Length: 215
Image (cartoon, rainbow, N blue to C red; front, side, top):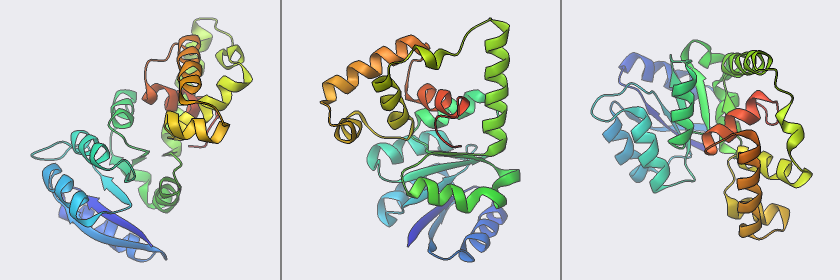
């Protein structure tokens, strides 16, 4: 059973999500929060598998609440439900520990898939976001006359990139590839330099843009 905590400051949104989720087998709504501080508290006491959270929240915004929740318990999968499609919000959400990002207008079609994906440890992005990011990236590459940066990576760096983009830590990546964490960190540093990336959020976005992981 996948345990869900719903976080939104609008009661009608919470009610709609609860109604939708209660119809899905294997999913249980264990609580609701109407502000960011309550979300952090309930995430600790209810121990949900997934937290569905909006960005614009009173008392403590959704991104900071997500950061605190993921910091306290990295095993909780956080999915942001938002009206914002701007890349800066997506980057900030991933930086805060979110593994999924859905646009509210499309949430009813993608919510179950997002929950099951994140619960299984895989990231999930709304199709409209993945498409927009991909189109923006292609446009920027063409504008600067750049070649496919992915080709610069070694086979091992590509493997490390894929696992990191799926949300695995250096230690988990090392275990999968039968490498030392130090070696993984070296590959991580090298691939980030080659691709011009600066943090995990940018690694995930790069992977989505280049169809290395599924949105």
